[in-house]
Image (cartoon, rainbow, N blue to C red):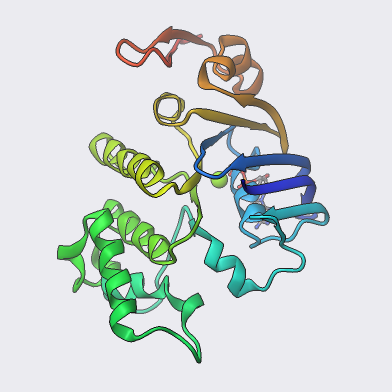
Length: 259
Ligand code: ADP
Ligand code: MG
């Protein structure tokens, strides 16, 4: 079963950049890292898969359902997004922010509020932010906010979770903590995860499949050992690296060689 599939999906902002003819799919339960230099289209591709941006040509299917025909509410029941920046314009408390993840499910026939509350509590427990529930979101550290936004996404109970550079603003301990949590969600809940990753070494450690973008096109797609080669890094990133084998996991480990 495919979690999503794009078929020759094309998108342009109208300013020169375009994602061109992207055909990409992921099986349910896969963990996919999206890598590529700044401006290569990682965030745009995540927005296309989540239906935030519509493809101008081609199709995007979520769970077999074309985004052209899907209702917004139906889409938000399948896919949740953790964007790079998440702003709260008002003084919301953590628990209220996480509850926003339930919005797509509220309606005339919504479940009892105690069930909704249980889902919110469970999402906060997964991420380990129970003790933050009464704090104001805007007063949290960057790492704490990142966790709250992840809990909000999990409260949606999605099948597919998309994250845009989730570790970029975290210190090394919180980076590992977050990636371990994603791994656990993937293994224990079968959640399909696609994350844009900046740090190639962390991407190699945690993602069994790396999709590489360059100037709006997919130029590599495979296991880290096949994708993260010195020639590929030079071609895609213009960087000179030596690739070694990680001492305990044997995945590629990149060492920058100053020019
Ligand atoms: P990445 O996430 O890989 O850094 P993005 O998908 O954010 O790349 O951006 C790809 C290109 O699209 C860049 O040239 C960027 O300037 C442009 N772009 C991104 N978002 C917008 C937007 N909202 N409007 C216009 N251009 C954008
Ligand atoms: Mg980006």
